[in-house]
Length: 525
Image (cartoon, rainbow, N blue to C red):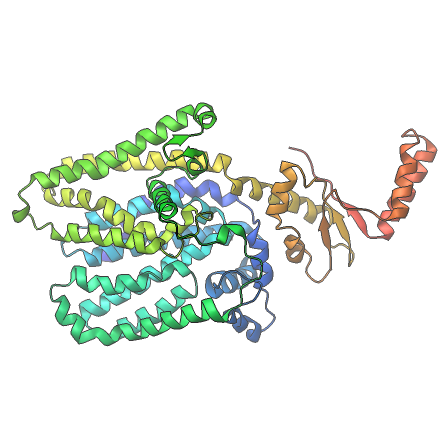
């Protein structure tokens, strides 16, 4: 009965989240997806187990959330992206439930305001655009899922004093590490939990210190294997270079903070100085800029500053608000620690790094509001009215963020190009001859060509569509054989439409066919 009641409370969050993110269900596979499909191929159990050994051509080590997931998903869904996106959205919903459960277990009050609003703000936040639109980014969802589950099992172990929960927490922690590096900070949260939320923290720590040993040994082994044993590719992209410049790191934290507050990702790329946006961007999107900055201030004021002011006006000694103060500090540490594995890549900063870290931020950000709701819990009409107000502000700011981001983001362009060209390839060349070359009608020097090259990850898509056929996908700069070029040059000297022109055209087509060269025809929008 209690489970049904809790799910009923979370149902509006699911519905609003679905409303905001449903447009992303149409996105096709692109870029890293095709690379992941190739690297997740396996013919037997032995090759599946090899996923866990690490490969020299991979910059990541996510055997569960990438290789195993893509292997199983392709067996189940083929190359239809819709069920993949449904799975990702479902996993997002599960993470919302786990956040609600986690905060409820931390909260020693009977009120569930804190757990509900944290789950709500996280679930409908605009930070999930990249994660939920790109199957290749689902490893962040998996990392959040296993991290939250491990933390919940650990809390159960502490509260119920049963070893089975500690063992479960440990094994799920291993799954988290094998899914996403950003799960590493969860280990620190396990250490911090008794310090922040147990009354007899010292007694418990002295008595149960050995519980942390498996976690520490596993983390050390993982870092050793990940950093020193697995050989990374010789060529490392410039965007993955480390920087320990304090100013750069602070700037990265600053933008992760603004993204957590529903400022669109694009604003970071339009900054020409720390406090000035590109004037052309401001003029071209004047209404958007007004709404974004206006709702940023509204959210900060109504969700954080105003509740904080009211809370501090009360007689603190009589109000048992220590839990919310501890939760606020704990959440802030979670946010900082959660970004540490990624924050030192200043040229590779994206909102998907917030999938785990933002949970801590929303705990910090919402603690004053949750405390205020607890103080005035007897005044139900006021509470519901104020909650409806702040939640409406938050949902609308997310809506603005997501619809704008969808309209201009490179993910949208690449997914659209990928779908258009792959649909044409499937229709015109469902089973090409072995060793064929299919020329795509795109100039790689144009913007359209650059989008397609990135969307197809050069020629990775051919490995997915035409496995074992040795088919090459090339672009307009492809050089045809000399004998075919000679025929083509002759055609240029003859007026199209006459008999000689048709004869040469037939000869040219035959020459290209003999060399297994075919040209894709893509309808214009």
